[in-house]
Image 1 (cartoon, rainbow, N blue to C red):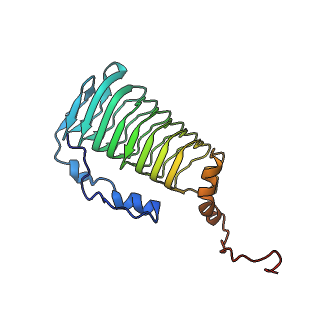
Image 2: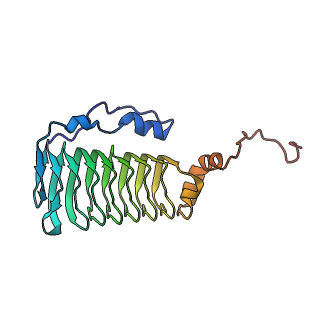
Image 3: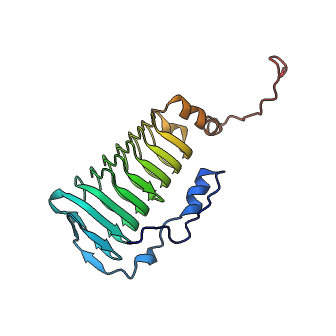
Length: 240
């Protein structure tokens, strides 16, 4: 299975704007890409399952547990995988639509060039997962566990991430656009070019450490309506 970069993945992103980086590197899949894929209805995922170049409709996991599942260039529609566990999951160059992934356990999962739309991942456990070039739109990710995960070039749009746990995670060039991050726990995570484009209220109760606060200070001040003036080295009282 070829899981390398495809379809215009930019090799030299600009470091200036995290959101621009996420958008420039990949802007999601065109549905037409998967139009000619043969449909596998009521697909069952079990140990050693491998699919490439197909459309999986209403997929389930055999007996709720599977190991070593490798999916590439697939469209997954209406999957009912809630509460199931897949170890050694590899998902690349794929589109996931309207799936119920609540409570799934995918420890160490590898996702690359994957777009997820209108999915429910409430309570999903993605500990130590690696997400590269992933885009999530209109998804529920409340109480998701991403402990010690590595997110690189990931974009969340219009998602609910309340009570999400990101302790120990590494986030590189990650954008949160119009997302609800209330009570999310980022304590101990490493943030590099992360765009937290959420209203201040959407961050209420989020847990961050002092280093992260300093990194986010300018953006939070701008959202609060403060005008940031360069420090000219004036002595106290000079402004008066």
